[in-house]
Length: 143
Image 1 (cartoon, rainbow, N blue to C red):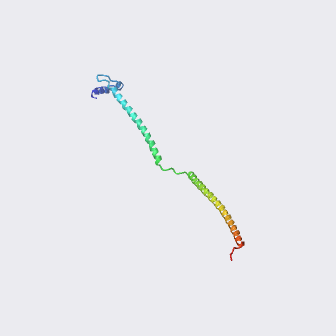
Image 2 (cartoon, rainbow, N blue to C red):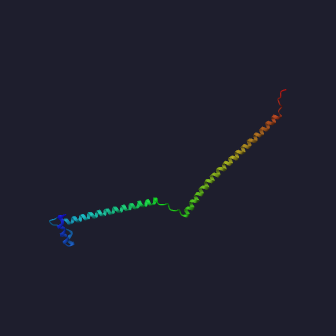
Image 3 (cartoon, helix red, strand yellow):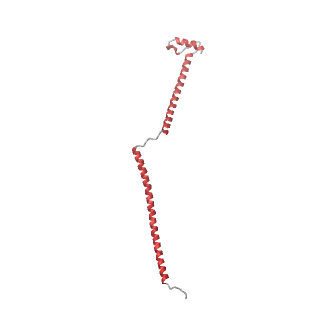
């Protein structure tokens, strides 16, 4: 840096238009400074782009987290009524199925009762016939 100091002093004294290049016994030091500045600008630009990408990514993550942990939106009146109606339909369907099942059981029970009554009637008829037979038959008594 000390070797370029006279070069820099000379550049400051020159008008700005002529500062583009300085060649002398100390070499070409101004273009090196420009290159360094350009490299720095490029790095700053890269860092800025990366920061913008990171910022966008963080915004998306924050939005996803907010959506995940936010309270559910309240239902509208219509949605609420539709949900109630749907539940009532489901309950009615289940009740209808139970009534149909009970109806089938009642029919089976009536059929069973009819068969039982018929068998009981037949048994009673047979018992009465047997009793008559026993009553009318001569007894086999031994003297």
